Image 1 (cartoon, rainbow, N blue to C red):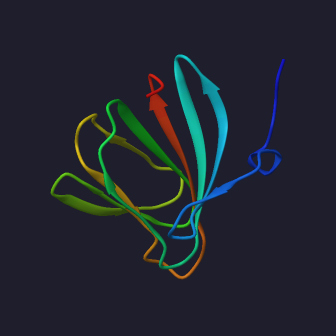
Image 2 (cartoon, rainbow, N blue to C red):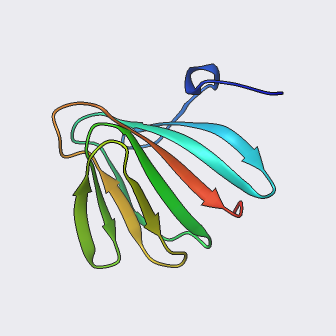
Length: 105
């Protein structure tokens, strides 16, 4: 049995100051823990696989294709492959979410 917390994995910081920790990686998929400070955003991009976002803390604003909507904690949001998507923290507190990619890109 293997276990880990997101704090166990050294995070990578992107240009927008987003902390990302790849907490699971296998041929069948990967899970990344993201931590976005207030005002931070992950710019719109395209992935070749389906993505699911699970909001752990805070409110996530997602833009998928032409739609933009905010989601509270404990919400799962699906984003189909090949559709531009971005994540925004428009709130006043940290936003933590899991990004689940299946299969691994």
